[in-house]
Image (cartoon, rainbow, N blue to C red; front, side):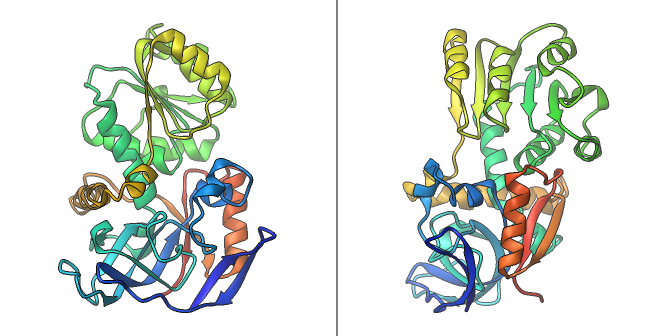
Length: 332
């Protein structure tokens, strides 16, 4: 099969490698589309994410068609269209034509969405769903969301709107992101353009000069410090990025905040596959019922080095403009 392989010099190259064969509990999938995530470029750098590399073929989510099954597979069959957050649980990453994954982490693709849209759901969708469930908010709680127009943020906002939440404030940095948020049902007066307005002062003003019950940070670094200062005493801080700073940690400690670290990876390490199956099943039902819509996507290109380099550059520069980046591997 063809695959994009990360080299020793951290460059990518298109190579021909062996097609993986499914183990007893695995399914083999011909990948139709693969999603890009920030962790993909972070793995090519010297950060902690580099330690998460389990294959020189990167990529952590996909949609496709089952082409073979292991002897112990019972729920899925050859020909089923599936989508999956493979993380580090697959035979290889998803910058490839084929992958083998445990049957227990894959779910049938919603029939009313494309393979490209489905490939953009698992990582962001599971993260957003975990945020929503773990914060356990009531409709009266005030919620601050930084970086709401990104992949996780947009699905999280869709969940909030679908469940009747209205008491939240979001940040965005350009007109396209702001338009995408208003299209999701966010009112203009709930949106802070951080390029024009001071986040701290504007957020306080929009929340009747009260600190927030919950802060969901999807940006990290210096923005964490602002979000931490906006949190009330004993408030809930949701960390999705793992990009906190010594300053923000000190502020959160002084606030007596409950800190929830959000990680899909944690469940993969412990082989808690029901997290993936149950989460994707719930998201699939929400999509099929049109309670939420799939993410806005941008198909960067087909399976080649140029596509990967371009997509990771866009992610590194944070220029997705609220769109999930997708690589088209195969066509129906």
